[in-house]
Length: 171
Image (cartoon, rainbow, N blue to C red; front, side, top):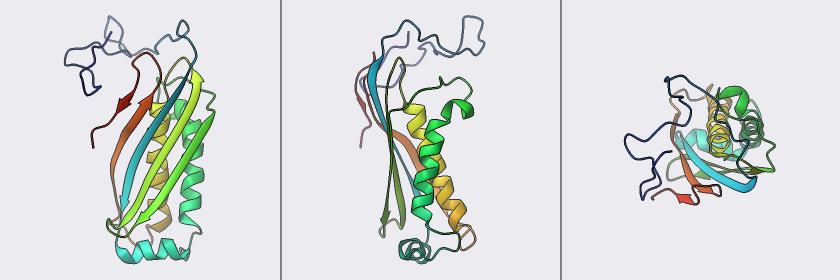
């Protein structure tokens, strides 16, 4: 079992749960774990020029409503995470929320996903996948006007529930 440091990260030399004694990849057996309520929140940023951000905010992007499309893409991605990440368990998610705010100071969009499940394993990968795909969708929707858009800072903000308890990223 992996030891946790005060920051919530695994200590150096801790065992990896998806690697067996022979060093081969495996799906973790969660059948003996109790079903508990678990929530994960992840975040990322899409950085662009002020002109491109203004195009998004005005709703004049050629492909349509950039933020609405990105929200739907993020929700769909969370639901299909086990098809994309080889060792993830398929989960019956009870909630997926994608919040996207525009920020003229970046300039760009801040994307945040909140994912909830009652089950034997956490939803960190679902939240991270949702943010990643929502950010990629924003890029896809605006790449015709700006190819230099950058996706940055995708990370887990918070995890609640499960054996390891509550984790909150340092600011």
